[in-house]
Length: 291
Image 1 (cartoon, rainbow, N blue to C red):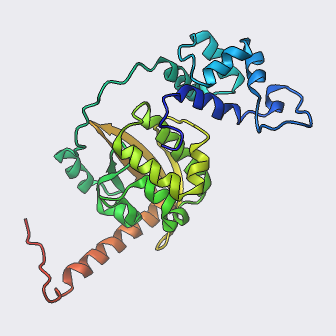
Image 2 (tube, helix red, strand yellow):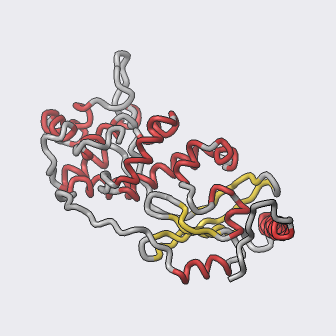
Image 3 (cartoon, rainbow, N blue to C red):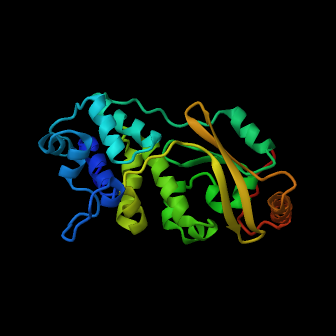
């Protein structure tokens, strides 16, 4: 998985984060003959108060059981935030994996009913960001939110999705950090292996961001998107776990410009749906019967 197939996840993470800390951030004179973008191994060891040989063993996977005190010192030297620090501690605490029994992802019937009644864009995604269900407003917002699409794949391989986001680069970095947290130690999940492998081969921005080993909690936020029909929309996004899947809802501030545009989008979507329903069926085409 482009560097994640090895069992040295702790060493991979330490090395990636070390590359992101500049000598200036660490209070070390940069000098003129540096050949690494960030800190040297011996510099990390010195700042953390451990021997250079021991730190080398950690990065190379020869010692996978460092004490919490050592990890806390490394987190400080590498300028990790609370989420990244927790992730680092978790990497060292991972026990040998047992074979997983992966159940098919299922959207409860009540969630389908709930989606149908929501007047704002909403959809359900699986663990690997496959769209499993969505309401008409979600599809009106983005056709890539139809069931069967994968959000991660669309995000990096579909030019229309990239144009959709106001700050795609920032959103991409946040998305990849969320993927790493979501994946956790389930690195042999066939769906993750398939997606990460495809994107590592097909997208340079993905490869660059994946190599950083950023992590971020699965949370909502506020996004600005550009819809081809109604223009710029500023929407809040909330995510809620429902059994084994995630419900995602987009909504604007009440009575805002985006609220008005979202109502316009709903009217446009209903008009298009009525036009499709009234269109004569072509030869050989069968219309679905009413339930």
